[in-house]
Amino acid sequence: MNYKILDNFLDQTSFDYLSSLKLKNVSPNEVLNHHNRVYKNGEIESHCISSEILKNLQNSCHKIAINLLNELAPHKTSLYEYTDFNIIETGKDYTFPIHRDHVNKLLSGVIYLKPEKNTGTIIYKNKKGDNPCEIPWKENRALFFSRTEKNSWHNYKGDGKNNRIVLVYNLMTTDTKAICKLEKINYNFIKFREFINPYFYRIFKKVL
Image (cartoon, rainbow, N blue to C red):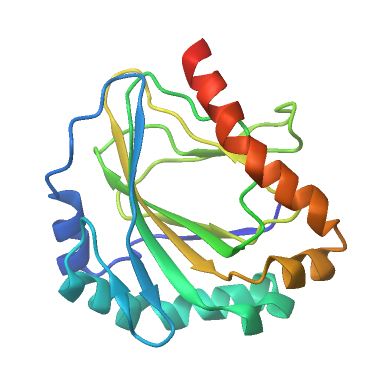
């Protein structure tokens, strides 16, 4: 999988703000996602991040993200519609299953927020988890990649000591058919897979 690592990605004001957010308590075996969006036309959906900070993130980071998408998957850039800025807190004992991202994610990014030490994102050769490679945790380090069907397997987990808090930064589209055409994958199969995935993750969570 091709990926890019950028240290000190966020400006200090944004990093300090996001790292100090007061979030809902997350149990050791739970993961919680706080969704926020900025659309191409400037419209904002703010749920846990202030509109002012979302505007600042979009203004300061969007050009960098688009340039990364142009480098990693230039055939997808014209499909961009909005940006996800999601805060995800992972319980210290929780492990998210090995997966590839939703086809609607043009560029997938994660910025490590806190604590000072934890487990980074782990990438794999395949769904079985062969050849694991961890992108080491470092505060304000960003990892970016553009998903493909065959080469974007990854997961994340707590370190057994502290909850793991990140900013997930995704460039998004709603045009699933166009992505399927670009990647030469069956649209109906993708729709079915995305329909059943939430049930799979619930079962996985219960097993844990």
